[in-house]
Length: 409
Image (cartoon, rainbow, N blue to C red; front, side, top):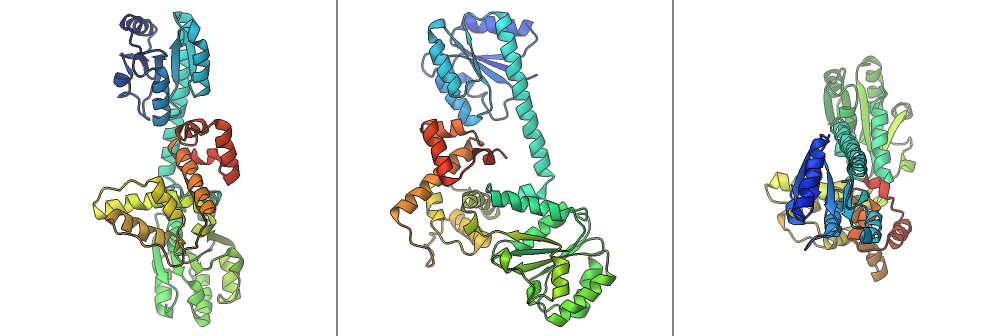
């Protein structure tokens, strides 16, 4: 069982509570002020907080607000006098787990603490489980984004990876077709087998056969299958009939799944590949993913360059969202590297001109998304961080089609 952090400036009351919990077999730690307490309040703190509402300087409300910013799921129980019950009720509306009236009898105190400790234990257990699952799930680790399209992409990757059929991956230039092929391999039962990436264009017969032989019990990825000459496509079909231990993944550069049709790909090969297919959406179809992806690419660029990652302010994000990132993930990676290196980024010549209203709406949407991401999907905490009434906050989420639960990944 976790620990109870008791925060109260009244030393005698604090010691009495510590003794009560010690006799009940509950671990506890005392702090005489917010300043002392904040060193314990971390997102991985395995305990709960029991704090007096009224304290000189930073009171229980400030401690509650601070705790919510660090970890919105950290239970904070407030101790209050009889005259302060309306304030305690207000604190409950702001995210307090519960409140207890002073003087607090042992029989009233322990059940509330036990309930809070169990809640905390479940939260941390779920977080650990989620971290474990993500660590063993390449799709969760390597496909960035919080939009429905990003979630659908991860789901599609996992689905086709579990199959043993050939696969066709399509996407606009720069969306990461070859990367998705690699993730499918990592998610598949063939993950321990060989994996090769080859350009389909210019691949001669003997080299193609050798690649298939080298990938026995593994996966061969042929990029730009649509550029492979028709006679080589027919040769590929024949070779696949004999190399049955190889799984083929083919890539096509196509802006929309509606454009994935037989034409440049020989019909028999096309229908063999499209038994299982994955289309990667462009960034223009999921703009809410751009800040998330940019943040990840900035971290990667900082590691590669050996530099500290600069802060991504709302102004940086707003400017980013005004750009025409037609190069998709590849272009966003380049922008992230320029940002880390301090290279001034010029506005794209193809950037669509936006009016003031559209720009302000984009900034507002970005701020809402950032607040939800920092609060891990807890709308109340996000609304408070933006100093917005809850109804106004929820109205704005509805306006932009943003769902708070999406950020609880």
